[in-house]
Image 1 (cartoon, rainbow, N blue to C red):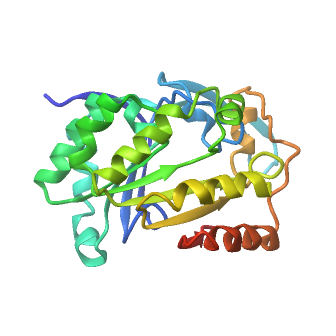
Image 2: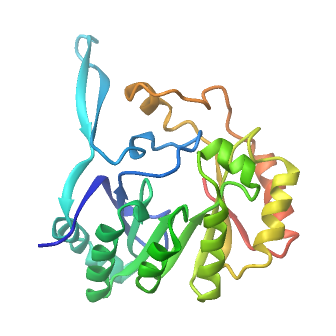
Length: 267
């Protein structure tokens, strides 16, 4: 019997979660509650009920439909879905990405899946905030081929204010991965009025220029998750924030490149 865990989605043919064509498994549960999170359904580890408004095409009548987000599975169930796409991994040099939420919030479930993927020769990517104990990190470090490491701030006070958690362990875990020679891509969500000022960008540059990483990926803020906050009856603290302009993102990219970093903008 495999480990039990709770997921809220499995996305097939993902092309933005690591190299090649990938299957992305979304874990439920996260220790942080970032103000701008576009997956608010991932915050609680327990399954949640959301209410969607449905408009019929014929009469344009509107009614409410309740839907449960999140389900308990065992690792064998997830592996069956993953293995359906083996041919696509082989042809595109892709694999599996574990995302969330925060996968390290369900460490035993994650470890079991990583071990099973390794036995099948499947490339593994972990999309993580790094918000976990070093003990849990060290358990999975040898099972992950690529880390997509999300950074929100270097400044601890701002990180605590906007996410609800300190970033001391996050930054320490990042340095641990780098010292172990792991492949790391840093992902920075660019949130207007929050972390897009020049001082914050310089702090990113100063830190990351001292760490061995593959590149930095900038993730401009968007409003894709706005409807989810309504459906979950949660407060959307970013409802009045607009997405950054292309010119501003390009300026941030150029600023980070001055620190000797390779930078890519993800749309």
